[in-house]
View 1 (tube, rainbow, N blue to C red):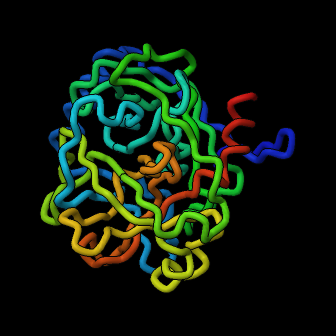
View 2 (tube, helix red, strand yellow; view 1 turned 90 degrees about the vertical axis):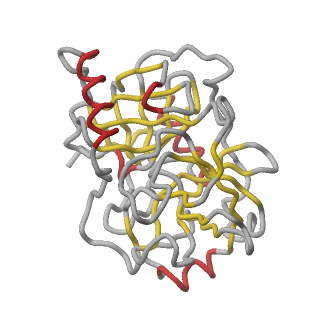
Amino acid sequence: MPTLFTEKGVPYSVVHLKQPANAEAAAAAAIRNVSSQPLLQAAPSEGAGAGVQWDGGRILNGAKAEECQFPHQVAFITNFNTFCGGSLIGARWVLTAAHCVFDNAQWILVLAGSANWASAPVQAYAARGYLHGDYNASYLVNDVALLDLGADLPLDDCLQPVDLETQGCDNDDLAGEQAVTSGWGYTSGNTHVLEDWLQYVDTEIVRNEYCLSFYGNITVADTTVCSVSPVGASGTLCGGDSGGPLVWQATGRQMGINSFVASRGCTAGWPSGYARVPCFVQWIEAVQAL
């Protein structure tokens, strides 16, 4: 396990990463491997809460994103075979789920700048991963992490940071609001191969009380936000890829980090769970200032 640190009241742990000896060849091999093999999802622990599954999420019957529609969306591959999503929140910072940044990671390759992750024009190896110090791997509470890329990425129209929502840490503040989630996960319940092109689906925030009725209070904490597909929507929401963003449509700011979905399957109609970003803005800013 990574060593836990506390600085200025902020708890965190650090995963130190390195670049492979032949970085270019390793990147090409990792992309080929993940493109052609059944998707291996990050699953840090076997002690799941009731009904929780770390399958990285799926967007079933979602819409195909336009190029540059979600310029903050990034993908990353860990150790050749594990895939997660994330969001660019600064020229050198990626926000993602803690369960995507496990302590045996040797390297993490970030892919950005295109809706097609496999041909992303921007590739960078992360220097460090920071996990929230109160992250509970068994129940995915405080499922938040940052990747420090060590250097700024070249920003353009297709690669831009997303602003973070600072309002709505209270459980009921966002209920009924419309949001959008995006990712490259499975596009049907019968496949376990990644989609090359970014998909997205509209979703509606629900009260935590409603989410508790499905998952219980061990998994659904005050720092969790849940959403469901609106009634009659053509897309079936099961979250985007693990670590991917949930964006509040009214503000264009990120309000959630994809964390968990229902173990009984993506068509079960259960809510999807996200780390509630407004509750972690202080932690994020403190880590960036280290």
